[in-house]
Image 1 (tube, helix red, strand yellow):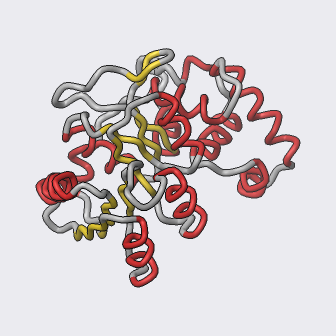
Image 2 (cartoon, one colour):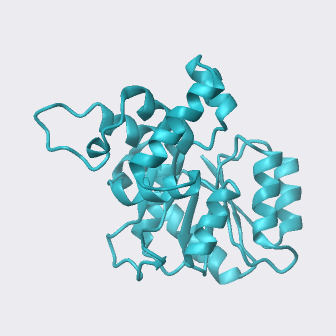
Image 3 (cartoon, rainbow, N blue to C red):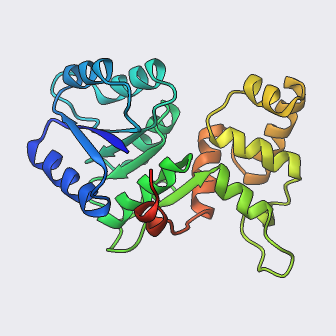
Length: 242
C-alpha cells in the first residue's frame, strides 16, 4: 500500500508518517509539503492507494486541491487531515469528494479507523453533535464510518440479533441498495445503471431514503448514517495485506 501525505508543516508530516508506519510497517509513505509538489508526485507515479491532504497549504487552498485531485484521479481516495473540526468544513469536504475527514487533534485510533474505513470503500467522518463538531475523542474512541459494507451488514443482520439503528429506518432492500451506492458518491444516473432501473425510479428511492433519515440532501444523509454506524475496524486494517 502506498500513501501520499500532503501537509506544509514538517512536524505534522513526520508525525503522521510515524503513526502510519507504527500501524503498518509495510506501508510506503511519500510526503509533499506543497500542492505543486503533490501534483508533480501524482503525475510521476500512478501507484498511490490513498492521499491524505491538509486543507491549509502555503501555495493553494486545500479545498481547491481536493476538488482537483478527485476530478483528475477519481479512483484515488482522499482523506482530509485538518486542524479544523468545524461542521461546515466537514460537510464541504464530503461535498467536494473527500472519503474521510480526520481532525488533527483526534487520537491515533481515529486515524487508524479512518484508514480502515476508507480503504474498505467507505466514508469516514468525525462524530458530530447537531450544529457543531463533537469534542476531541479520547484515546480509543473513533469517529463515524459510512460505506457499502456497513449498509450491507445492517441489511443482512439475522432476525435473532438486536435491530440496528439502520434497520429501524425500515428501508426496503432496494432502498438499502440505493443508500449504499449513494454513500459511495454515485450520481443518480450511475446508480440507475448499476441497478438496471430508470433514473426516475432511483430518484423515488433516494427521496424515500432521505425521508427515512429525516434529511434533505445527500451530504446530510452521509452525516446521518455516520452517526448510526460506529464500528471497529482497526485490527482488520492492521492485519490486511493491502
